[in-house]
Length: 64
Ligand SMILES: [Zn+2]
Image (cartoon, rainbow, N blue to C red; front, top):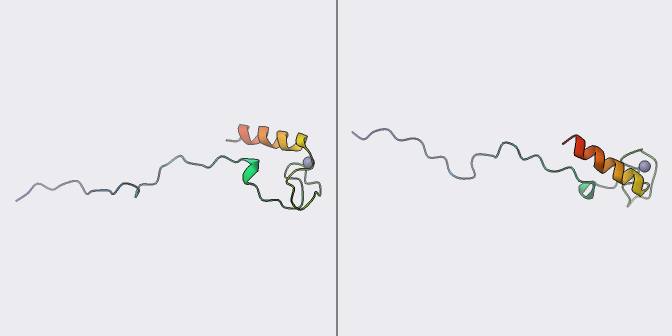
């Protein structure tokens, strides 16, 4: 009788635990309003200005 073996776990079956994708403004969909201050902007833009974009980036850094 053979000794019982550890069940083989195929590589990739185990999901890596800590892989939250970085929240970058580049991946945000334009929603017709500034993502930071909610001011209405061009439908292709995410922020009303560079200041809001920068502020949003900074906040994303802190909440990571
Ligand atoms: Zn704004």
